[in-house]
Every structure is written in structure tokens, then in C-alpha cells.
Amino acid sequence: MPTVSLKERIKQGLLLLDGGMGTELIARGVEIGTCNDHLNIESPDIILEIQRAYSQAGSDAIITNTFGANQYALARHGLAEEAVKINQAAARIARKAAGEQKYVLGDIGPSGDFLEPLGMLKADDLKKAFTEQAEALLAGGVDGFIIETMTALDEIAVAIEAVKSVSGDLPVLASMSYDKAGDAFRTMMGVDIEAAVSKIVTLDVDAIGFNCGTTTLDEYVELSEKLVSTVKRFNKDLAVSAEPNAGKPELIDGRATYKVTPEDFAATAEKIHALGVSIVGGCCGTTPEHIQAMAQRLKNADYSKV
Image 1 (cartoon, rainbow, N blue to C red):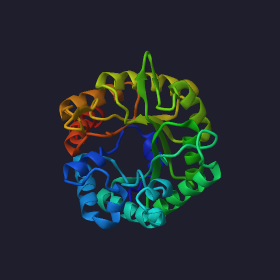
Image 2 (image 1 turned 90 degrees about the vertical axis):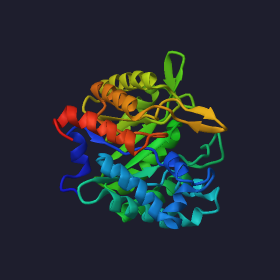
Image 3 (image 1 turned 60 degrees about the vertical axis):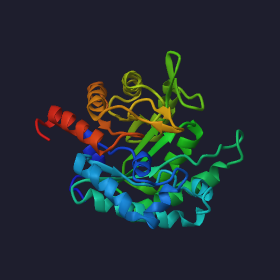
């Protein structure tokens, strides 16, 4: 593990995350509809290969392959009872890929269900599921947690509470997924930036950010500017994170396709970082080549060398 804690490293400035996992698995022949999280058990070598490629490309932190590894998401594949095993295995794989000098973030994604009264899911039950996942990731050796692609404020609040109940001094990053809605950005559940930040900032996280979404590169820059200004208005010392997709996907032969080049992605990442986003990575459609181009551009700018 690195000698500097991830919490302290975040305070030091630019931290590069890795890129897409799902689209990389598809590119390697994994069928759509496969439980990607179970690949940590079934095919760990393919996960290690992808994560090691990101580490070599310049990522400072590797995110575990556990986006859908809570018991509710796993239940759709008949794997709810495997949650602990899957998360612990994922953390160990990511640690192996990260090596001794880089960090591992435990990834927690949405349940895919709705909390009461909109849905049938009870907050206490959801908290237990997220707590179980966080405990397993912690046992596997993560350095911190990233809660991402959230669209509902009540769910991200439960997730943060659950993770912080077991995380101790480890950092927690909280990220929501926004789309352009007129002149504003909102999540699928209608949450705007102001509402998200004003709630999340009270939950003692280490970074607030965005990831995924169906927006263009220019819109990601606009989103970053609005998010940074809002976060800094509430807490000027709080870090901001961004994991844009490789642009807006195009539907080709029934499959979402991302056409943004590594060079164009890196140029956008540079603009986002210049706005005050200190934690930068990639989401769907980004590859090790995208992360390498970004790392070369941003690390040259900040450190004068790769």
C-alpha cells in the first residue's frame, strides 16, 4: 500500500482514476447481460488484465469491479448470497493490479430498486445491503470507497451512511449521474446539482462528483463548471470528482458505441481539471488508451513529467 493515505493524497491535488469496465469487458467478448461482478470469481484474470492496463496507463487509483455487487443487484442473477465473496475477491484483484504505489477504491453502485414510498425497498434493508458490501470490500483491502452513478438522493444518502458506518478514516467519494435538461443538469430522478450538493455536503464525504450520463464532451465541461461552483459555495475545501463517458453514445447495430478519441477525451479532461476538478477518471467507453492520453496531458501540466 502507498505510504500516504488516500485521504491525505486527495488533499494534495490531482488524482487520476481509471476508466470503463463494462465496455472493456464487452470489447473482450463478454456477453451483454453477464453478471460482470461475478467475473471476479469466474474469470478473475480478465478483470486483472483490464485493471492492470489502467494502472500502467497512469491511473493513480483502481476502482474495484463491484458496481453491481450489492445483494439486490446480484439477486437478479441469482447471486445475492455471493455478495461477500464477490466483493472480497474484487478488492484483492484490484489490489494486485494497483501494486504497492497505487490506491484501490471500493465501488458501490445503485441497487436498481426504489425506496419507499416510490418503491417497495425499505431504507433499513438497503443500508444493510450496502453495509455488507462495504465491509467485504474493506476486508479485501480497499483504501477508500466511491459511491457512483446514483440518481436518487435518498439512495445515495443511505449508501453514504452505510459506508461511513464501517469505513473509519477511509475516504468516501460520492458521485451522481446527470443529463442535460434544458439549461440545467438533472439526474434520471430529477435531482439537480444544487439539491444534490446541498444534501451530500452535510454527509461528511471527501469528494462530490459526477460520472456517466448521456452528454457530449462540451456538456461535461459545462457540468463540471456548475458542479465546482456549487460545491465550493458550500465547502471551498471539498474535492470535486469527474468521470465522464467517452462522449455521448451512438446506437449502432443495437449497441451503444463511443467514438471519442483518446486525444479528444484528454483535451476535455484538461478543461475539466482546469475548472477545479481534482479527481478525474473515465466512465463508459473510455479505455486504457483514453486514460493514458489523459495522464500524459494532466500529469505533464501538473508535475512537468509523466
